[in-house]
Image 1 (tube, one colour):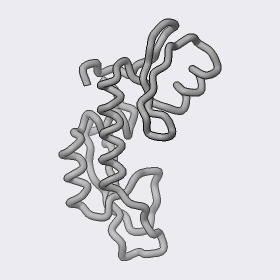
Image 2: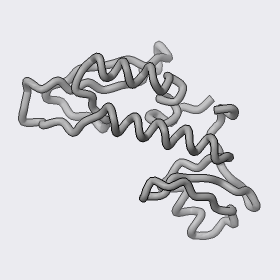
Image 3: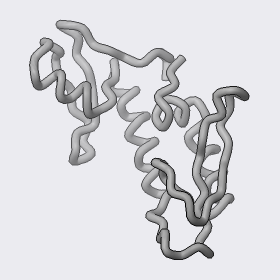
Length: 131
């Protein structure tokens, strides 16, 4: 992604987002209720290419993550977290404590995901850390 800051459109800007069906849409910002809804519920981007990068991130997330069975304490449940003190992404394992995260069924899959999407994308799209 060329521009590292989170995009907030102003009147007259065209922006791109991924709709609920997974398609990339664009809209001209005119500061109405439609814009407010889209910006509140979706990430928006300056360019089609930036939005396409985010879509690729979501596709990989779907490919690598799974829905844990919280009644199965023997099931591996790995998740990514951001350590603000150390300024880095790391992995944690849990078998019974649920966080508002996505989960991977192995340490290997967690690492593969991080390698494929890069840490900057993870910081932006999972933790809203831009720049």
